[in-house]
Image (cartoon, rainbow, N blue to C red; front, side, top):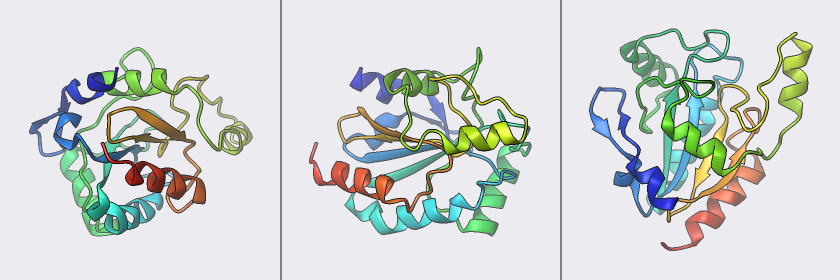
Amino acid sequence: MSHGLYDIPLTAIDGTAKTLGQYKGKVLLVVNVASKCGLTPQYEGLEKLYEQKHAQGLEVLGFPANDFLGQEPGSEAEIQEFCSLTYAVKFPLFSKVTVVGEKKHPLYHALTNALPDATGEGPMRAKLKGYGLEANPKPEVQWNFEKFLIDREGRVAARFAPDVTPDDPRIVQAIDAALAKQA
C-alpha cells in the first residue's frame, strides 16, 4: 500500500507530469483547496506551516477541487495567480482534481480508503447542515480544505476535517511527530 501512493500519476498546476514519488522520504500534507470558500483563508496558515517546517522535510501539496458548490471555478492559471497574489503561496499546487464521487481521482480514492475517519469530525458537518447542505457520508471528503498527512514512508498517518485549521495543535503535533521519525 505504501508504495501505491507514490506511483499514482498526478499533474502539476503547470501541466507537468508528477507523482508523489518525488517527495519520497518527506512528510506530506495533502489538501484539497478552493479559492472561493469560507475556508479559503486557510491558505495563509498552510503557507506558514510550509515555510516553518519545509526545511525539516514537510511538503504541503494543494489539490484544487471544484466539488463543493463550485467554489473553485477558475482555470489552473487563475488558481495559480490567485494563490500567489492573495496568499503568496509557494507550496506546490497541482491541476484540478475531483475528490468525491464516481470520478474521484485515484489519489483521493487511496487516501479516503486508507483513513475513513477525520480528526475534528463533527462541527463542519453540523455547520453544513445549518446551511441546508448534506455532508458526504464517510469515507468521502467532506468539504474543501480536508487534510491528509502522509508519513516519510508513504503511509496515511492522519486525516483532519476541513475546519481543523493549519495551526490547530492536533495538526501541528501530528506533523511534528511525523517529522521526528526518519524514513
